[in-house]
Length: 128
Image 1 (tube, rainbow, N blue to C red):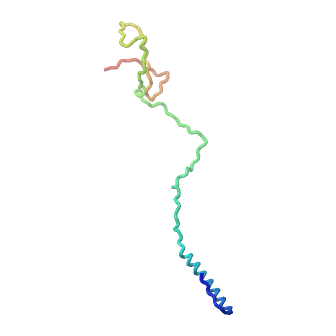
Image 2 (cartoon, rainbow, N blue to C red; image 1 turned 180 degrees about the vertical axis):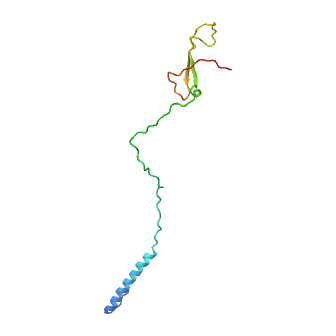
Image 3 (cartoon, rainbow, N blue to C red; image 1 turned 90 degrees about the vertical axis):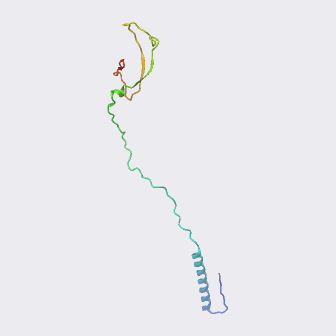
């Protein structure tokens, strides 16, 4: 800070000095403000906007109608042999013509169809 003083009783001089001092202080203050670097404005990253669900869930459950099984008969006839009863009649047993016997096979449904009690499997021979 610069201060100027002078000797004398002139009121005008005191007033002028006070004005000069005030102007000097104001000039120095202004100089400090203009020389102060203001940091650049930095943008703060934000989250990517997302879409908000606008529909509300319904209070009713959704019912999905199913159609009857549209599979072909060939698709429903898929099965796998999972076992057989060999205690009663072992494989390779030779029987006389007309002899009655019972043979049991165990099969598993490997199709996409449901077999109910009306589904029948009939023993047959493969035709070459």
